[in-house]
Length: 186
Image: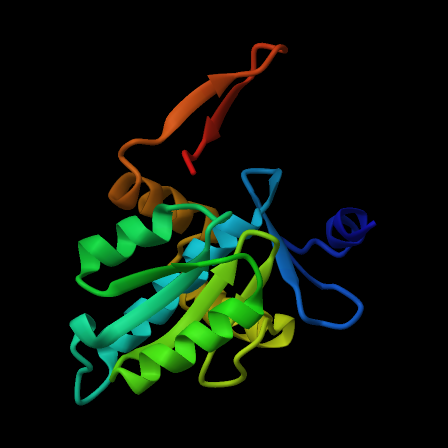
């Protein structure tokens, strides 16, 4: 229904929250094709955006004192991003109670902990609340979209750039129908 409404209204972006607004997902239309972002894809896009914001802060926060979290069932791409960028990645058990508590421990150790995610479309922005927050995720995502669109770029284009930079070990699978699909190793 959302895609039909977006098509009828000539829109290229769809945002959705669940009924209690603690989860968030989005879709983007590029080249007449819709892409529904998975929880892992959105998790990496939001992490990258938060990391870029931290790089622009004045005075700069040393990235060695920045930590981001994800659950054991989530993509390992955040770990790759953190290692490449020089910040810390912490993996927790599944659930935001684990991520929220671990973020508090890291703050007590002197780390800035702005973000955590789980593949089940849950995102935590710790400066707002130490739990999943779909409204905050939508707001951060829209800030990213505004920045990209002002540069003539797309969200799916940024995701492809991030794959190239942080996931050189990406693999391809061919479905039974002969369609080529990219899959990210967990």
